[in-house]
Amino acid sequence: MASADLERGRDAYGRRAWRSAYDAFVRADASDGLGADDLDLFATCAYLIGRDDESMAYFERAHHRFLEEGDERRAVRCAFWLGMNLLLRGEIGPASGWLGRAERMLDRDADSAEHGYLLLPEAFQLSLQGDLEGAAATAGRAGDIGERFGDADLFALASGVQGQFLVGQGQIELGLRLLDEAMVAATSPEAGSPIVTGIVYCGVILSCVETYQVRRAQEWTDVLTRWCEEQPELVAFTGRCLIHRAEIMQLHGAWSDALEEARRASARLSRGFNRGATAQAFYRQGELERLRGDLEAAEQAYEEARRYGFEPQPGSALLRLAQGREEAAVAAIRRVLGEATDRPRRAGLLPAFVEIALAVGDVDEAAEASRELEQLAEEYASTLLRAAAAQARGAVELAREDPAAALASLRRSWHAWHELEAPYEAARARALLGLACRLLGDEDTALRELEAARDAFVDLGAHPDRRRVESWLSGPAALETHGLTARELEVLRLVAAGKTNRDIATALVISEHTVARHLQNVFAKLDVSSRTAASAFAYEHDLV
Image (cartoon, rainbow, N blue to C red):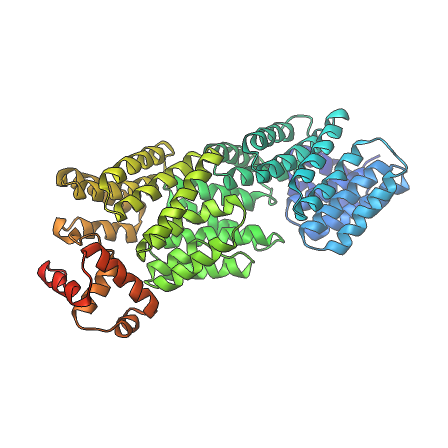
């Protein structure tokens, strides 16, 4: 007959009161010891409240107890979870040992759902070798086994993994359909393991984020949030949930709430083993601090992200630009984009590349990056990427002094951001719209667009953007720069003051090569061919 503590543990487990169940199992184990089934529940509870090391120990005990009771299939499942957890922690040798043991045990049992579980590590190994097609096919075989044996957990895991691999191959639509199917299976009444449900939730949302499927990511994040809130004692997966919530809040302009969620996520995740997720939480903090203008706090958050193994780009390069360190910004964003081989990563870097390239006068490079971003936007059929691509194109067209073309691109961008309910990005598009209208001679519309952008930045707390737009609002004369960027104006003024390229490089903390490039741009835009002619132009047009 089960003890009272054991009954309490089982009851609390059924109610998803994980901490209460764990405490009851601790007492029951101390007084009477636990059988294999209850050790399995005990291990799950420990995992869900963040006691990873204890969870591993209880899964190992459950494995041996199942063997003693002659239930090899359940023993194999425990070995599978031990192996997968060790893999995620980077402990390759012990992980291989447990997975190898499970495979040897299955040799005596030729047809079971457990064969499907053990195909999943094989699929991950193929993906690490670069064979995404083979990885997706192997995960698909695992899903077929799960469906054949009516194992909802296996089907959900396998479908989620296969969907992620297909997305990685560029089969976006098919991959996303499988991810949705995985979510339905993981949340069905037939699903038995809350660990599987949490893993599938996080994997699916991460894939949606990485492919810029904003609405899908938001829908599944809302579902994940409700799932977490229904389990107040849950610790596992809640950190990831907070990161995704912070990303959605940031997009929709709730920056203070987003920053609080990101801080909670980093505090929670830093106590566990998921260094990648912890780094993402710090990176999200850095992004929000940078946009608010607290550059020191942004620097600190980015450094924490680095400490946990993630290079905080493109945020760090944009931070260098905000600090006036243009050479460092250009060098960083060029290097990172050059290293990026996968398309989702490049899509995330290209808008920043365009912004930084235009800031230093490299219009041709910005145009090339803008074209690549447009191609990726169509490949992913992403409204967010299309909005970013149209905005990048408009900014390039402004730099090339083609305000009519810029106006059309920026209108498309603004409408897309508005549809996505992304007030910050919409305000940035609107500010550029104001500049385009001004260059077309429509000062009345320009002022309305710039004022609307400024008001949005005030509401958001986007102080650097607010100050920039306020400088544009100071009057049309402030923008009579004849197509020169802010840095090109600085170079022209120093040339007009009689400074050499070396003097200018020292004054602006840039290289002489960069000074020469800026000066070449100045000559081209002002249609002059010498330093003397450029200086005369500057004095004649009140640019000094």
